[in-house]
Image 1 (cartoon, rainbow, N blue to C red):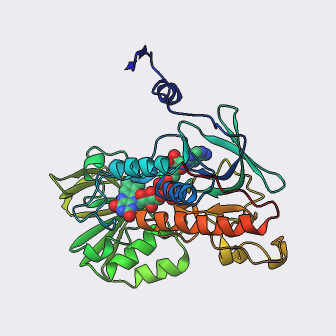
Image 2 (cartoon, helix red, strand yellow):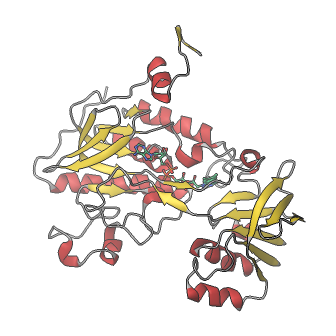
Image 3 (cartoon, rainbow, N blue to C red):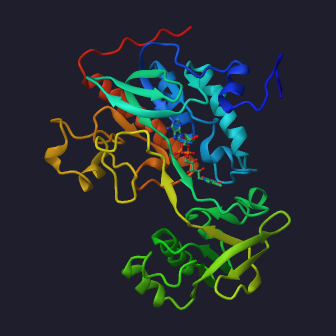
Length: 365
Ligand SMILES: Cc1cc2nc3c(=O)[nH]c(=O)nc-3n(C[C@H](O)[C@H](O)[C@H](O)COP(=O)(O)OP(=O)(O)OC[C@H]3O[C@@H](n4cnc5c(N)ncnc54)[C@H](O)[C@@H]3O)c2cc1C
């Protein structure tokens, strides 16, 4: 592979990033703010942090954009009436963050975090360390992907990962929900009040091991929800939008084709939190970070170490904030992730003012 004037053989992502001259290691000994994860929440935090005078570094393990970066068209982002591709939105945000003075490290995975006295250290997979006075965790969620043929083309065009809270209003006719967990159950109930029929495709032979009893009861009493157990989605098809799917009965092998324009895959998401010390950050039962007043759903008020209340978006470790999909109860949309990134920076300012040795704002060139 030729990158600039170098020829690389089977290069790793880090080798490609270095070959194009993009930084993978921090240039400063300390930053006011380190943001982990360059999805919409992290990019927004970088734009606001840098534009408001904080020495800001944004650390991303893969490429800019996060989940949004892999989306062919985001139709519901304010200001883009024709929609915008996730990669274009991400590259515009990257350019904006850089222009405003943020440093961006790519192919730099944070593998562990350490808490010092008013400082935080993120250790990268390269062995380098990022030291900062405050942190925003914006490491998002990774959804279980089905990896079906046509998936990339039809994603966001009738085929969705997640609960589809903003698409639900548009759905009509017969809608399919893949999964048998609580998020699938809630999605099915939400959709059932708006559409003719909802079919849940569940791999197991019942919902009782995967779904809360109250949701099972609600589903039972909702006549337009059909639960198809031992069933899997095996194919999706359509020209510009989803038009038809194929499902398989896992016990008989029988395949069924159905016309539908709507499938929501709720097969589970995993918050990307392996790099943090779980003992220091309170989470909800699904592993998402508790922040602000929500903290007291996970810790006793006397476990919060300060006299003041936690700031909005602040985790159970003062000075560590969370924004976007990683946060408990987040809406899981680009616009909300962007809003949370900005809101987290506002809380970072309050936090930095509250600790003794206030930073000196960087002078702008
Ligand atoms: C297929 C798909 C389509 C979607 N379509 C829409 C849509 O049309 N409209 C809409 O509003 N929303 C859509 N969403 C949801 C939206 O993309 C997410 O809500 C949004 O991206 C969340 O942003 P985030 O910044 O919180 O996290 P993410 O986008 O998940 O970004 C997190 C980033 O953190 C990085 N990271 C994780 N761990 C580490 C680590 N240890 N060190 C460094 N970096 C790390 C990841 O690589 C990733 O880049 C879609 C999601 C998917 C999956």
